[in-house]
Length: 313
Image (cartoon, rainbow, N blue to C red; front, top):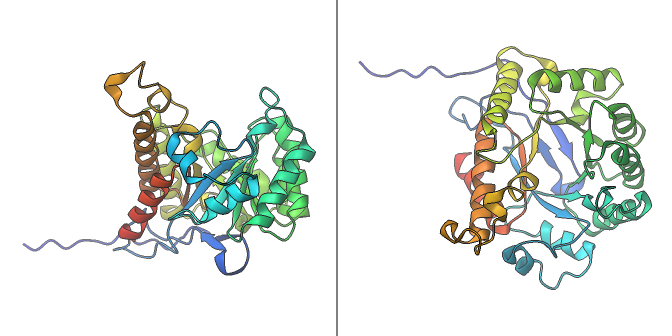
């Protein structure tokens, strides 16, 4: 008997959210099928790849990343080279220096950095805070105000500060709100519910449901992404139909496989190759599980994942 495949088609779809302005603006979401099930229906414009840079520059990066940015001496020049990276769709500026337990840069200084980067590039911009809830509450409001008209995605609004960040980004200054939760479908949905109750339109919300490096409890990430996408499409759950963005670089380059020196672990081989492999493996799994955008760092990772997406589309 011939095999008759039954297409998995859904009446629901993921909302489309546009980031950036002009010809290089990107749209996340729009798919009405499971990840890369292009034989069943539309994947929208397909997943996007972003390049992470930080206000701290590239001094602490591996050799391959330093080599790529050679000659770029200011954050604006670094941002321009990131935007030109093969496979890059957008730039993500992580304001790492704002961490009170780190460099503890001022809100004013970091806002000026964000403005400098936004003015230097013509691709969409994502701005991520320093991961300190109190500092980000103040910082992201100021960034949202300074970047009016740029249609940037601001990460992250969490349960603790969604009123402040959501009101500034999604209401006062017409930016896109990144709703961040901790690898739990119920938490992700609840944050979307209360953010929309605040008045933010669903079309102005992108979810960051959390991540981890492959091998580090990553099954929870896969399970959460799978469940969110299934509920959004098969159950038409409108509070889970926002597109998803996943910062991969910040997770994968901070695990022992990517950090242990070749002197300490000679049997593991090149430390840079390990980091690239971890970044590519994690991004691939994340995309296959349902994210609409990944944020990477190494030029080789960006080019590889971008090529993978194109071949699967």
